[in-house]
Image (cartoon, rainbow, N blue to C red):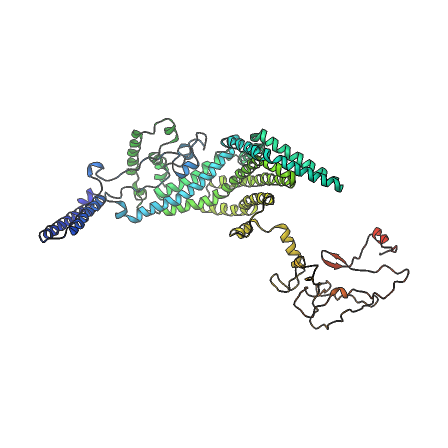
Length: 638
């Protein structure tokens, strides 16, 4: 009978009896030792022990019966839209989400799991696995909701267009004018003086082309700095129409062409499929059971206030008590799904993990694509703020103006490319996860995951983000000397990729490296050698294995000089790579040296001498007629 009245199975009664027995035992022992002359220190220790036992017993038993229902079923407090981490990121708005959807009605509020009817004693003591499953499941579920909230937040920021950066207009205006007054007006005089000296030097050299070029760039820089000071907001919004409207129209155009929805379709589907359906899975075991279909929305309304109730001021204590009563009434209608509802059955950690997998497959690419658009807009505004300072620097370093144009162009191009791919990805997501599509969940996740990986490889949104920042750093980093070789330099260079010039130079030497590798001691880099002075060394080539060492200055007559042997690859065998450590190396210039004592007879063709092309001695087999005439040879080469 006790078990029938107490859902904890009589555990509360045993706890009370245990506390009473412990108190009696301690009291008896205390009275005996008081008569025996116990020290005061031990008395205080035992008194503290009695108080601790009573406190623990009070916690285990719970509050008095008059403060809670006889069955110990306590409904949760209703949630409010816009609270928590996700609510602060994607705040509720009247025009967000399709009409009648969960996202439009309450946003992310109430999409959390609770334990219910676990007994009058502390649930963590009687059912530790149940409470742990609910708590960990909510933490993983929060990560999935955070990804969805980030996508929807960025989606509506871009879709709203002009209102995106309105809060930053005052900041941009103040920062631009401060830059103009502190940098431009202070240093423009010194910059113009240096510019005048440079123009004077160019005029003395007669370099009219560079003189005109630098003058034009200086005039353009002063115009840009003054324009940014006079109308910073207008210049910062110059690309908003192209980027914001262009990306929004591209993404909406994919859905409009096939009749799948409008701008609210993607956020609604993300909240419904990733958040709401998995919330039903944690409360009912599966989102397609009859109880989930009939009671799901009513249960959500009992756990949270709606956006309309908050806006109309109906989120009061009376409404909260009414929702608690509705929660208990819905619990009585659960039927065979009651154990899932209380948290005793099912796996809420599994439901949260599934939601996280869906968020990665569906929302991650969309999130980075939309962040890329926002970063591009911020870079353009940063360039406008720095325009007065850049104008002063451009007087002495004209390469800054082309650098600004390259940065702005990269931001625009990257945004348009990734925006188009994000629109195509949104079309795929809506087609696979729309209600009534009839596609298996894991098949849709597989297709979406593969397409996400393919589009990630094509668009490379993270690489494009890094490239825009890297381009800005490389273009403007030359103005102020930087520090290299730090602990993060290797990580940055790996994300940035190889510099085109370094890659081309390394490939050139690798093609001519023969059998030596980059780490070989015989590898020679002529650009690092001393070409003059006491440390200069002539370039030599190692003799092939088995060849006898030639004389110091061999003389090879022109008529008897043999052709170089042809190897298996069809190319002349020019020997191994130049090295320093082989004692048998010879000077290859002496091979093609003619006898200086041989006189040139009248009418003989001009002597053929090698020419250096990219550091390699070569013989030209064709020479234009103008060059042959200049050499004094009018004969035909063909």
